Image 1 (cartoon, rainbow, N blue to C red):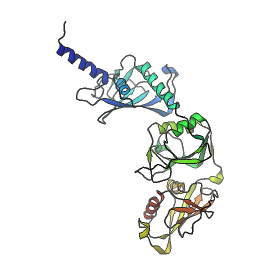
Image 2: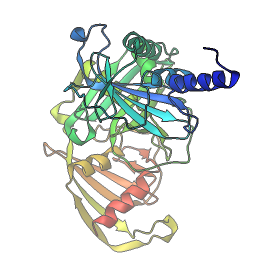
Image 3: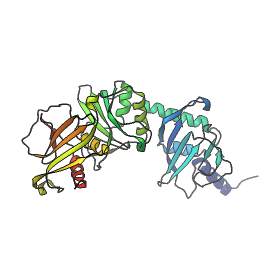
Image 4: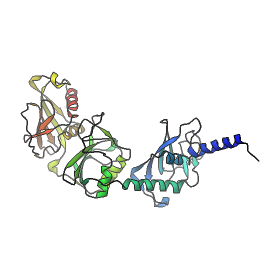
Amino acid sequence: MLLRSRDLVAFAAALMIVTCGCTAEQSPIVKATVTRSYSLEDKNADRQLLRPVAVTVVSDPNEAARLASFFPDLGHGRESRRAGPWIQFADIQFERANGEKLSVRVDPHLVDWTEGHGDWPIAQGFGPYFLTLLREAESAKEAVAPSPFEKVTIKSFYTLDDTEAKRKPLEGQRITVLDDARQIARLASFFPDAGTGKESNTASLWYPFAEIEFVRDDGEPVKVQVSADFSTWDEGRMSDWDLPAEFGPYFLKLLQTAKSEMESDAQSPFVKATIEYYFSLEDKQEDRKRLDERMAVVVEDPEEVIRLASFFVNVGRGKESNMAGPWEASAKIVLVRKNGDEVKVTLSFDLQEWSEGQGDWPLSRKFEPYFLDLLRSKE
């Protein structure tokens, strides 16, 4: 049967719909995020369940569209009476150019997929293609540029459960030291321009999961903190930067597999804080007045105490500074460890510096609003 030109055009358009996973009315697929629950061996029987999961982002629009082409009628809510009791190999979230998100799950044998309303067979050739795609992405992650750092020390303050809700504060700190060049380069790649003093227009108060100290070849340290939900990092200034979705699973796995040590009981965690302050609580420093009598509050919530102590880096270790300004104290904080030891710090009136009596150290710009809010909550 001969097809007219108009029929050929219609046929070609229909073919494009199947290929790219979109219709003429739909925005094209431009990105895919794969959250994988299993390792990448060829045979399903050889694969291991991952804890935590692995995240791969396919940011090439052509590759994302090709991946979507294995799932015909994606996003149409199609239903099937066939549904097997399987644990997913991966969840794939597709994103259209207009921001719309679509999710599918694929089974461990890489032969079935679902949007939650029954199973459908995946197009032929998916398994080898998908495994190759993920392996190449993993290899690309490892092939990062050389790092200017030669050593990394990670201080983490929480347990290593997969989900944030399950994590609990540690009784102490976990110390992890990295000296492998590949590991250091991979970790440093998540913090572009760290140590350059760059600033952003966004900042928020959050509990740090860990403090990471990178040491350059010349011995200069660069310190960053990562938030408890692994979404944000900063260098202690009033500037937050986003972390990619794959950082959390990667960082947890790194800490779970790397050799770590817990600090001795001499560095047991802080469980209580007593604060004496001598000023009113206006937001602006110039509006604050010195009080005739001292005000005192007690903080006993473990997470709040950890948050407060985190602003005083290496507190309780007798650190000394060559800087010591003639400032008047605005507050005294007594931090009490679980073993009963006490550490005392004083704060400058502008809440910009702190001291244990052996020199001054700067405070993050985040400290002032946090501290004021903490004191107001205790009024």
